[in-house]
Image (cartoon, rainbow, N blue to C red):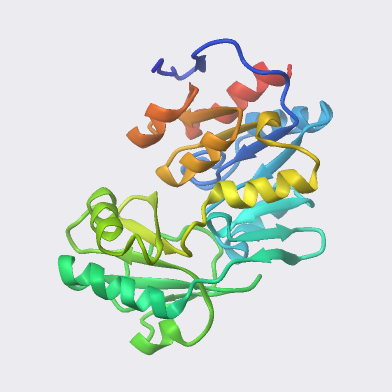
Length: 281
């Protein structure tokens, strides 16, 4: 794997034909560490649009946690949220798809994981364009930005309404160890995603970012062969595998670095822009 530098992205070989679809993760990818979008990245996205291509945000964030970013970027089209479970029409402010977690299967999955790890701390994403995050006592809040959240919720509150996914934390285990245990103990019941440091997510079985992105591409008359995708965590792996060209950010999780076609500079160095400038100039 060729690694990227702070000023240039390095590719393994010749790129496919010009892309018509640009798919970007948000946190650790399109957004800087301060959760803003750099001026160079904004200019690169404008270049993409000027060349007739479509930019689609593909994020683990829920719609309610993504809307302000889309508004800041001036996005009025489709976005893929909730690890692929929500396809959101920003102009109409409506969900085109919404995949719900089976709460009984999720309860059983958590019990089987806790049988190995001991007590876990959880939070849940409620469904809907205004869905809240319901967090149990002790949950380490790492949800950046404008997300409606209920803190220190009673245990039964997590299960009181339809959920899209569950965040799981452990006082000692990191996301790699947690994901390994969860997959072995409950991978037949739920999907397991590593989307950020220190926690995993339990999803409807079979759901991933590629699911939602493929749906959007079909609506646009496009396929993976038309797509370049950017990410930084293992939950981006299905999307990068689906796309014709997958780009990992500098500092990306080793699993993504090993699978990517190209390494870009980091998100604080406008790495997405560096690659897009080369592809679309």
